[in-house]
Image 1 (tube, helix red, strand yellow):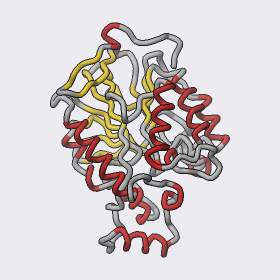
Image 2 (cartoon, one colour):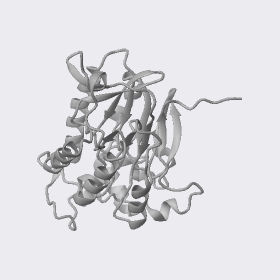
Image 3 (tube, rainbow, N blue to C red):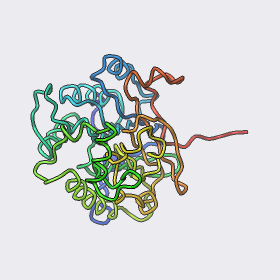
Image 4 (spheres, helix red, strand yellow):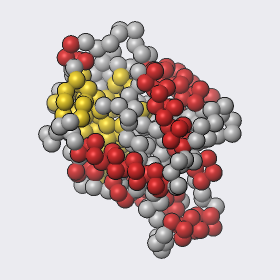
Length: 307
């Protein structure tokens, strides 16, 4: 964390919100910035992280997963960013949850996730298991909620009605996510069972927030299927979310939904809510784009347009 020390006074106060604590952080001078899919196993991407800096001492950074599949690399990246930004908020991606043969940390499933949460807490990084921090901006407070939800294969390919049919179709096209071999759900019987447990727990926490408090939800996967409509391989959508969250952007007063995973950075609007895909992606992908790679996306305050 920054050497400035703990936030004091109103900046460190804890407010009870209908039985759930949220961390209140005063301010208004900084920004909420976001990035995801850093994939720092690639030297070019690691160099991008080395160059990432806030624009002010008050800026927060939201990291929406897929930092790396190696725990040591995840630690390095989050420690580096936490030393520069006022607050770093992390939501895990599928790559963090892989039990990769090249990673000395061989934990699987829930044990691996809990290991990552403990590491983040050591670094001062906010996780989905912590009280949701409240960012105080010029338009008022918003609760920043990092989520860990996974997927349940409900974003099925056209013509398929079951997970089994969807997987059979995907294997036929050759488009199968490596999660099938590296992301273990232990002790849950399946990834979809783990997903449903996470959705139920998270839904309760979000419902406990005050009814007048807007939110920024940070999840590796989009909460609604619409961003998957532009995938070159539509069958990959099975590993991209769950229909169980399709109305969360309305139910939980979402100001902005921040996600990654698709490696298609863009802004979309769905039922009046802004969805921001903020991924860096692999070098072979970002080299083709006209924009420079590794640019942090501004989530809040909203851009003021003139003219």
